[in-house]
Length: 73
Image 1 (cartoon, rainbow, N blue to C red):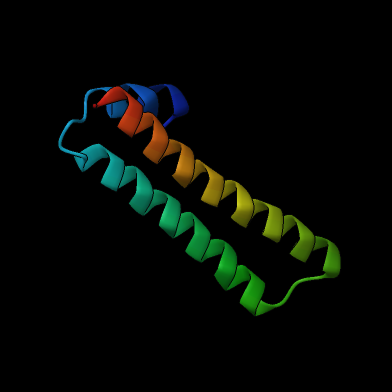
Image 2: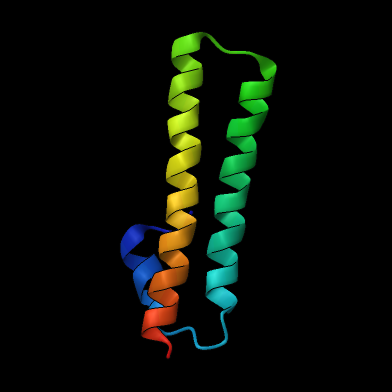
């Protein structure tokens, strides 16, 4: 798993987009794991938490893309 500090550094030095792709793949795997857990069944409280986790992963993906774009123009 990539730590936040190293993710920023990786994106700052990534004109090819290779590291961004790796980060996005990791985020996709996180999202898939949460969805699998949701499909397996959860209480209402757990489902609410899982939805928040999905939203957080989607936001992280968007932020990673924006940071990469702003640092590699």
